[in-house]
Length: 211
Image (tube, rainbow, N blue to C red; front, side, top):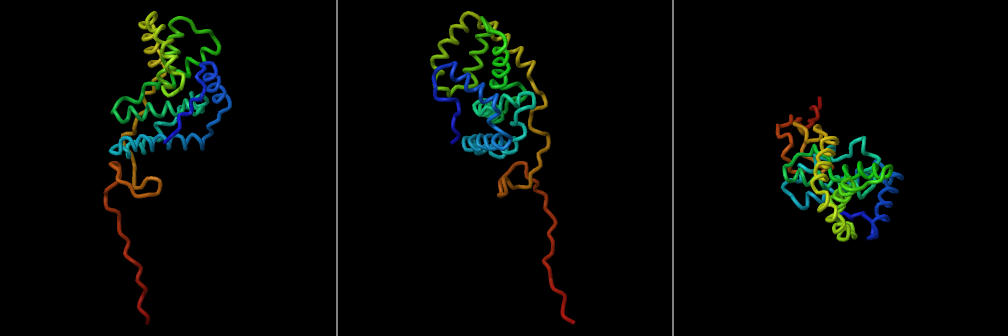
């Protein structure tokens, strides 16, 4: 099972610095990114075997977009992003809107340059709770978030909708046509996308008769 790489510290600044440092150092190179996405696909397939073929062919959809690629290089952010998209696929939901991880990264970068107060701080905490539910300090953070929700809940909702419109990607969806030859990772697989048309059968070689 995949590990939740969200750090062991329950201290919020330590956790956020860990995420930021991972982003800055680009810890997950292209190869690591592929491994992590495959890891999450396998976990989703184990949870919903009937959709294993859909998850397998969603790989390109799950890869982070170029604008956010440096940010989702952090394993914690990448796993959160991929898991949410896989969950949407499993539920038949739209994959175009941004994930909580993508929205969190956008607000996180803003907060590094401009202090967040009031509803923007509440937005930050709401997205943090949504993107990293497995973080050990989430219970304490949820209490802090509840305070902002009471004071600014409606305005936070508006900010979330603004982010969703701004970061939405209508082209991020399963392709209309998926090509599959009935093999996944080199092994025969039962797949709804497999080309079931009969392939031409080549006659076995027969040596010519001796003169």
